[in-house]
Image: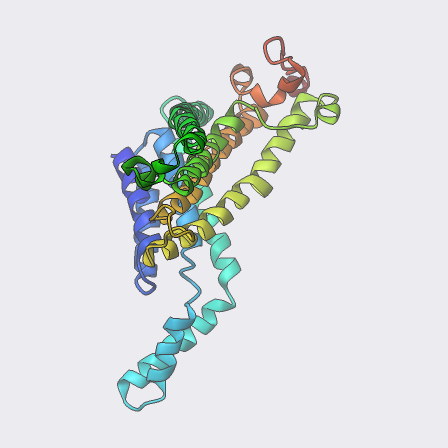
Length: 342
């Protein structure tokens, strides 16, 4: 039941991002109640954590407490008249003007509520709070790795397209009449080159999460390798909380709007012989950063377990306490003596 409610919360979050402004309050309330129900009924940890992340992203990204200009403009026009409709419009304008001064407290309240549901779901976990968090972290991390592995197959069509594009251009030097052929007219050089960077964009956008889970990104090991394991994990936790997850939220929010506007106008290539439907590639921008945010969530949970969990789980959660770029990943043994002493 809890897992089903978590899936419903995920579905509602996408509904909220795609719906016009107006019934956002209703959807937001239902979504938060569903998330609370999911926490109570012992959900699958990975699905619940994913739903908590997406509910947070969409409930803040949809800006339910800030009315758009077009919405207020319509009510302002209605308020200039007489009768009950004008009075209702004036009350609506006053309501949103009041909310505009309370946006930050209300958004912080949503974040606090989501964190409360995470704590509640963890405490109701059958194997204990920290085991629940660690299993959820492992499952989410495995998902982002699978996404990266499957996305890596995009290399194959990209290499084929590059090879064909080069061969086609060289072949024109020997046979200029090839420009009138069906193959050249269908697969113009512009289309081929745009497809190359489209596939390349998909490749790195969907592999961000894989790179973070595998710790394949750049670190300044000259500093980090001299720090204690606990300090490394604290830095990782604060980095996820203050920088990475908020950054993913911003890119997801603006990237979603970026792709939706492209879809509304059925945007195509600026080149006459380019590819149509540019909203498809733009849509991968928010998707890629959701995958990266899930990877950041997996790391965040693992850091919580390492710092605050029992000693018998520290070894399983100690990956980000190591110095992997210094080739110590296999031999690293976390120093838990300080934690035990404390």
